[in-house]
Length: 250
Image (cartoon, rainbow, N blue to C red; front, side):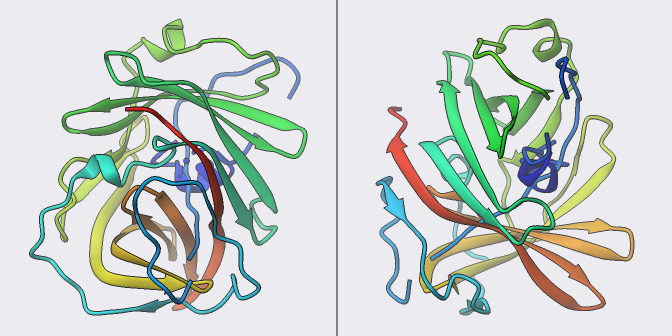
Protein backbone atom coordinates (compact mmCIF):
# COMPACT_ATOMS: atom_id res chain seq x y z
CA UNK A 1 0.00 0.00 0.00
CA UNK A 2 4.69 4.08 -0.33
CA UNK A 3 7.07 1.97 1.63
CA UNK A 4 5.15 -1.20 2.40
CA UNK A 5 2.45 0.43 0.71
CA UNK A 6 4.62 1.92 -1.76
CA UNK A 7 5.49 -1.53 -2.69
CA UNK A 8 2.08 -2.69 -2.02
CA UNK A 9 0.48 0.42 -3.14
CA UNK A 10 2.13 1.68 -6.16
CA UNK A 11 -1.07 0.29 -7.15
CA UNK A 12 -2.36 0.80 -3.82
CA UNK A 13 -0.21 3.96 -4.15
CA UNK A 14 0.88 -0.20 -2.24
CA UNK A 15 0.10 -2.46 -0.57
CA UNK A 16 1.54 2.52 -1.50
CA UNK A 17 1.83 2.61 2.15
CA UNK A 18 5.37 2.00 2.69
CA UNK A 19 7.69 4.92 2.35
CA UNK A 20 7.52 7.96 4.11
CA UNK A 21 10.26 15.14 5.40
CA UNK A 22 9.29 18.06 7.48
CA UNK A 23 6.53 19.83 5.73
CA UNK A 24 3.79 17.58 4.63
CA UNK A 25 3.68 16.79 0.96
CA UNK A 26 0.92 15.05 -0.87
CA UNK A 27 1.66 12.41 -3.42
CA UNK A 28 -0.93 10.69 -5.56
CA UNK A 29 0.15 7.17 -6.28
CA UNK A 30 2.03 4.44 -4.45
CA UNK A 31 2.96 0.74 -4.18
CA UNK A 32 2.56 -2.01 -1.59
CA UNK A 33 2.82 -5.65 -0.40
CA UNK A 34 2.94 -8.04 2.71
CA UNK A 35 2.12 -11.07 5.17
CA UNK A 36 1.98 -14.59 7.19
CA UNK A 37 0.58 -18.05 8.63
CA UNK A 38 0.76 -21.96 10.79
CA UNK A 39 0.62 -25.56 9.78
CA UNK A 40 -3.00 -25.49 10.83
CA UNK A 41 -5.43 -23.47 8.77
CA UNK A 42 -6.12 -20.12 10.38
CA UNK A 43 -9.74 -19.36 11.09
CA UNK A 44 -10.42 -16.52 8.69
CA UNK A 45 -13.08 -15.07 11.00
CA UNK A 46 -11.97 -11.58 11.92
CA UNK A 47 -10.18 -12.07 15.22
CA UNK A 48 -7.00 -10.64 16.68
CA UNK A 49 -4.05 -12.80 15.81
CA UNK A 50 -0.30 -13.03 16.11
CA UNK A 51 1.16 -14.53 12.97
CA UNK A 52 4.75 -14.55 14.14
CA UNK A 53 6.67 -17.84 14.10
CA UNK A 54 10.31 -18.79 14.21
CA UNK A 55 9.93 -20.06 10.67
CA UNK A 56 8.30 -16.93 9.30
CA UNK A 57 10.83 -16.81 6.47
CA UNK A 58 10.10 -20.35 5.29
CA UNK A 59 9.41 -21.10 1.65
CA UNK A 60 5.81 -20.72 0.59
CA UNK A 61 3.78 -23.77 -0.36
CA UNK A 62 0.57 -23.90 -2.34
CA UNK A 63 -2.20 -26.40 -3.01
CA UNK A 64 -4.26 -26.86 -6.15
CA UNK A 65 -5.59 -23.76 -7.82
CA UNK A 66 -9.33 -23.22 -7.72
CA UNK A 67 -10.78 -20.88 -10.32
CA UNK A 68 -14.44 -21.82 -10.04
CA UNK A 69 -15.52 -20.17 -6.79
CA UNK A 70 -16.92 -16.65 -6.58
CA UNK A 71 -14.97 -14.25 -4.36
CA UNK A 72 -16.23 -11.25 -2.38
CA UNK A 73 -13.54 -8.60 -2.90
CA UNK A 74 -14.52 -6.88 0.36
CA UNK A 75 -13.08 -9.82 2.27
CA UNK A 76 -9.73 -9.37 0.50
CA UNK A 77 -9.34 -5.62 0.93
CA UNK A 78 -6.14 -4.58 2.73
CA UNK A 79 -6.21 -2.52 5.92
CA UNK A 80 -10.00 -2.50 6.28
CA UNK A 81 -10.83 -5.31 8.73
CA UNK A 82 -8.59 -4.58 11.71
CA UNK A 83 -7.58 -1.50 13.68
CA UNK A 84 -3.90 -2.45 13.55
CA UNK A 85 -1.78 -4.45 11.12
CA UNK A 86 1.91 -5.11 11.70
CA UNK A 87 4.20 -6.09 8.86
CA UNK A 88 7.73 -7.41 8.90
CA UNK A 89 10.10 -6.50 6.10
CA UNK A 90 13.45 -7.85 4.98
CA UNK A 91 15.12 -4.44 5.42
CA UNK A 92 15.06 -3.51 1.74
CA UNK A 93 11.78 -1.64 2.21
CA UNK A 94 11.53 -1.56 6.01
CA UNK A 95 12.03 -3.85 8.97
CA UNK A 96 8.76 -3.27 10.81
CA UNK A 97 5.70 -1.25 9.85
CA UNK A 98 2.51 -0.61 11.80
CA UNK A 99 -0.66 0.37 9.98
CA UNK A 100 -3.40 1.98 12.06
CA UNK A 101 -7.03 2.65 11.13
CA UNK A 102 -7.47 6.28 12.27
CA UNK A 103 -10.89 7.08 10.80
CA UNK A 104 -13.42 4.35 10.10
CA UNK A 105 -15.34 4.07 6.82
CA UNK A 106 -18.09 6.69 6.56
CA UNK A 107 -21.41 6.17 4.77
CA UNK A 108 -19.56 6.56 1.46
CA UNK A 109 -17.00 3.91 2.37
CA UNK A 110 -14.17 6.44 2.83
CA UNK A 111 -11.63 5.69 5.54
CA UNK A 112 -8.15 6.81 6.62
CA UNK A 113 -5.15 4.80 7.75
CA UNK A 114 -1.63 5.76 8.79
CA UNK A 115 1.53 3.73 8.20
CA UNK A 116 4.27 4.13 10.83
CA UNK A 117 7.81 3.16 9.92
CA UNK A 118 10.39 4.12 12.54
CA UNK A 119 9.90 7.85 13.22
CA UNK A 120 8.06 8.48 9.96
CA UNK A 121 4.34 8.39 9.26
CA UNK A 122 2.27 8.56 6.10
CA UNK A 123 -1.52 8.86 5.95
CA UNK A 124 -3.67 7.32 3.22
CA UNK A 125 -7.29 7.88 2.30
CA UNK A 126 -9.21 4.98 0.71
CA UNK A 127 -12.72 4.46 -0.53
CA UNK A 128 -14.67 1.21 -0.81
CA UNK A 129 -16.92 1.19 -3.87
CA UNK A 130 -19.00 -1.42 -5.63
CA UNK A 131 -16.30 -1.76 -8.30
CA UNK A 132 -13.31 -2.01 -5.97
CA UNK A 133 -11.04 -0.37 -3.40
CA UNK A 134 -9.52 2.97 -4.42
CA UNK A 135 -6.79 5.13 -2.94
CA UNK A 136 -7.78 8.81 -3.01
CA UNK A 137 -4.75 10.51 -1.46
CA UNK A 138 -1.43 9.98 0.28
CA UNK A 139 0.06 12.41 2.81
CA UNK A 140 3.75 12.07 3.64
CA UNK A 141 5.31 13.65 6.73
CA UNK A 142 2.06 13.20 8.60
CA UNK A 143 2.80 14.61 12.06
CA UNK A 144 -0.55 15.65 13.55
CA UNK A 145 -3.58 13.39 13.68
CA UNK A 146 -6.38 14.91 11.60
CA UNK A 147 -9.26 13.77 9.47
CA UNK A 148 -8.15 14.11 5.84
CA UNK A 149 -10.96 12.11 4.28
CA UNK A 150 -12.64 15.26 2.97
CA UNK A 151 -9.52 17.30 2.24
CA UNK A 152 -8.99 18.90 -1.21
CA UNK A 153 -6.36 16.29 -1.99
CA UNK A 154 -8.76 13.44 -1.30
CA UNK A 155 -11.63 14.97 -3.28
CA UNK A 156 -9.84 16.25 -6.39
CA UNK A 157 -10.80 13.27 -8.53
CA UNK A 158 -7.32 11.73 -8.67
CA UNK A 159 -7.40 8.09 -7.60
CA UNK A 160 -5.67 4.74 -7.89
CA UNK A 161 -7.44 1.38 -8.09
CA UNK A 162 -5.95 -0.88 -5.45
CA UNK A 163 -8.13 -3.95 -5.77
CA UNK A 164 -10.99 -4.47 -8.25
CA UNK A 165 -14.29 -6.12 -7.37
CA UNK A 166 -13.69 -8.73 -10.07
CA UNK A 167 -11.08 -11.10 -8.66
CA UNK A 168 -11.46 -13.84 -11.24
CA UNK A 169 -8.18 -15.38 -12.35
CA UNK A 170 -7.03 -13.65 -15.53
CA UNK A 171 -8.52 -10.26 -14.62
CA UNK A 172 -6.14 -7.39 -15.43
CA UNK A 173 -6.50 -3.80 -14.26
CA UNK A 174 -4.58 -0.52 -14.27
CA UNK A 175 -3.39 0.90 -10.98
CA UNK A 176 -1.62 4.12 -10.06
CA UNK A 177 -2.88 7.70 -10.26
CA UNK A 178 -1.99 7.78 -13.93
CA UNK A 179 -2.96 4.15 -14.55
CA UNK A 180 0.73 3.49 -15.04
CA UNK A 181 0.84 0.04 -13.44
CA UNK A 182 -0.73 -3.08 -14.88
CA UNK A 183 -1.75 -5.76 -12.41
CA UNK A 184 -3.17 -9.18 -13.07
CA UNK A 185 -4.95 -11.67 -10.82
CA UNK A 186 -2.80 -14.65 -11.78
CA UNK A 187 -3.76 -17.42 -9.36
CA UNK A 188 -6.28 -18.54 -6.77
CA UNK A 189 -4.97 -21.09 -4.27
CA UNK A 190 -7.20 -23.43 -2.28
CA UNK A 191 -4.46 -23.39 0.33
CA UNK A 192 -1.42 -21.17 0.71
CA UNK A 193 1.16 -21.67 3.45
CA UNK A 194 4.14 -19.70 4.64
CA UNK A 195 5.82 -18.99 7.94
CA UNK A 196 3.98 -21.87 9.56
CA UNK A 197 0.46 -20.70 8.76
CA UNK A 198 -2.05 -21.84 6.18
CA UNK A 199 -4.63 -19.60 4.51
CA UNK A 200 -7.46 -20.71 2.25
CA UNK A 201 -8.63 -19.20 -1.05
CA UNK A 202 -5.63 -16.89 -1.43
CA UNK A 203 -5.36 -14.75 -4.55
CA UNK A 204 -2.08 -13.76 -6.18
CA UNK A 205 -1.80 -10.41 -7.96
CA UNK A 206 1.22 -9.85 -10.21
CA UNK A 207 2.68 -6.48 -11.21
CA UNK A 208 5.51 -6.22 -13.74
CA UNK A 209 8.36 -3.89 -12.77
CA UNK A 210 11.10 -3.53 -15.38
CA UNK A 211 12.83 -6.87 -15.82
CA UNK A 212 11.19 -8.28 -12.69
CA UNK A 213 7.84 -8.29 -10.95
CA UNK A 214 6.10 -8.01 -7.59
CA UNK A 215 3.72 -10.68 -6.34
CA UNK A 216 1.02 -9.64 -3.88
CA UNK A 217 -0.90 -12.28 -1.93
CA UNK A 218 -4.31 -11.53 -0.40
CA UNK A 219 -6.23 -13.75 2.03
CA UNK A 220 -9.89 -13.51 3.08
CA UNK A 221 -10.37 -11.10 6.02
CA UNK A 222 -6.62 -10.54 6.46
CA UNK A 223 -6.11 -8.71 3.18
CA UNK A 224 -2.50 -8.35 2.14
CA UNK A 225 -0.45 -11.09 3.76
CA UNK A 226 2.72 -11.35 1.69
CA UNK A 227 4.73 -9.49 -0.93
CA UNK A 228 7.45 -11.02 -3.08
CA UNK A 229 9.98 -9.40 -5.39
CA UNK A 230 10.96 -11.58 -8.34
CA UNK A 231 14.19 -11.10 -10.28
CA UNK A 232 15.71 -13.64 -12.67
CA UNK A 233 13.06 -16.16 -11.62
CA UNK A 234 14.19 -15.83 -8.01
CA UNK A 235 11.36 -14.87 -5.62
CA UNK A 236 12.28 -13.09 -2.39
CA UNK A 237 9.79 -12.38 0.38
CA UNK A 238 10.16 -8.69 1.22
CA UNK A 239 7.03 -7.99 3.29
CA UNK A 240 4.82 -10.24 5.38
CA UNK A 241 1.96 -9.74 7.81
CA UNK A 242 2.89 -10.81 11.33
CA UNK A 243 -0.03 -9.66 13.50
CA UNK A 244 -3.45 -7.99 13.57
CA UNK A 245 -5.36 -6.39 16.43
CA UNK A 246 -8.82 -4.95 17.01
CA UNK A 247 -11.79 -5.67 14.78
CA UNK A 248 -13.36 -2.88 12.77
CA UNK A 249 -17.10 -2.89 13.43
CA UNK A 250 -19.02 -3.13 10.15
